[in-house]
Image 1 (tube, one colour):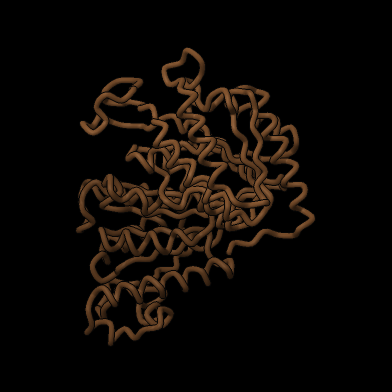
Image 2 (cartoon, rainbow, N blue to C red):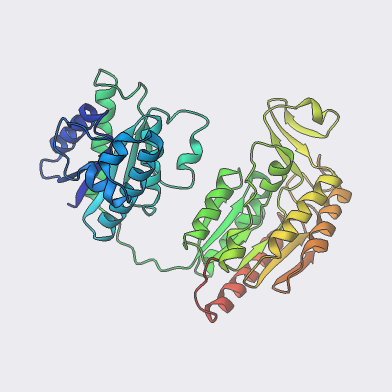
Length: 412
């Protein structure tokens, strides 16, 4: 069994970390723990750390005595860099099989930056006082860190914190003892975007790609899903992208709850990853209410969970953005346009059927797409037609196969 790394601020959370380590040893007496102190000040600890905070300060390019007399923010920044560097070294050398930490606000920020650099699938646990906050989800978005809500503040041991720390210790011990899976799966990986309103078309594409020998990772185009996909592309996990559902741009522009952010559609273009892009569900914005500024618009659903039909003018904005993003492609790619509707409810006699708005979208994309690397094709089909999904899948396969002869992709 590989060692378990336990890191954190042992100056203020020494009692809690001592208990956590005791629980690890109780669960598996053979478990070896590397305790790493990342406190940004000189202190007398409750127990001797395997790796002192003096060492971590040096790894971060600082001196602990100097940090202790300086401002706290500078000290924490140095310790974050030191902890990241030291943990990366431990991982690269194969010494550790998992990592666990706990903390309040600052401890969570520090802990997450250290844990996020570790690869997907490697056991990593954060016990946090702010795990349940609606504003902190971005800390762990796009990664597989197990985040455990401490329920009460991490301030001593009590009838609430003890069982939570104990469960966390059991989780990391079990994960490390189980070890990493052995896999001979060398299939190329395709990232696909899907929404409830584009499921049939994407599923048809996914099924065909799987028969061609691809492993398809589907990301729900709900904002977090698109951002996560972009991150995995940048990290080199993805060989091709089937981005049929770019609906997150509608929410980004119009203020919906599924906004993907301004960097959506950038990673594959920048990293030279073949992609087939379409306009799935750009006919709608996802809203939790109906703001006054949208009075008189076409809504579908309840007042507490509404889809709002996008206008021709808004579609011109989406089209301009998508055209400009695709113009940055550094590898051959394709844009596929379904002329008979872009979502399940954007079809003849459907509540969001609006050919004028769709045409505004198509025209704006083509007017703003200036790249000979991107092939544009229009189909007299609906985005959920099986033929459309399968055509996109075949095109992506062609692009990926052609890319193999060009060598490895590289992010710029």
